[in-house]
Image (tube, rainbow, N blue to C red; front, side):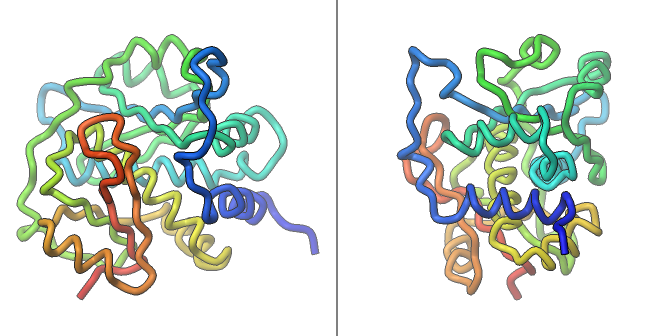
Length: 249
């Protein structure tokens, strides 16, 4: 029986994630094609800005949505962009948009997710020298949002991405990290598990915890961990996000 596009996309994601150490992937400043990145655009209006946890959840859902989009399981430009990215260091760049800037990027290849008060769109990766001008002109900095009181937010029985709040990452940095976590979690799932998750629109929650609770999450069975290379904001080899199929009790 032939595989459908989702099955192929999941197989490709799992094959390229696996046990690879992204730090060993070659990057040559003299060859810009070796420096690949997925752009993530966060819709951050000045009036009534979205809640930080919603922004992070939207970004994480958008990233895994791109990786497991049917177009990722077919031949064509969408898959070629992912394939080139999978074959190099997995970089993500979060940018801020609002008003027309947000509207104008909606026609570029990618996936938009609305989560609670927030919207984010993740795009097909490309060499950093080939980012579409509509995205490239959007600001990378000033993506921070106030922390939220997670004690007041009910815990839902869905895949959960725990962020180490003691690392004090900006919202943009954290968005890139949870995006990495969502794709690694999907890669660690069986095809059936990933398909069931996709049927929910990759519903998930992001929760910030202190270092002690984060360590407990990381020690849980089946934990999928994101280790950062330390290019920005955090020290090299910092564990930034812990992804679990279900929240820790």
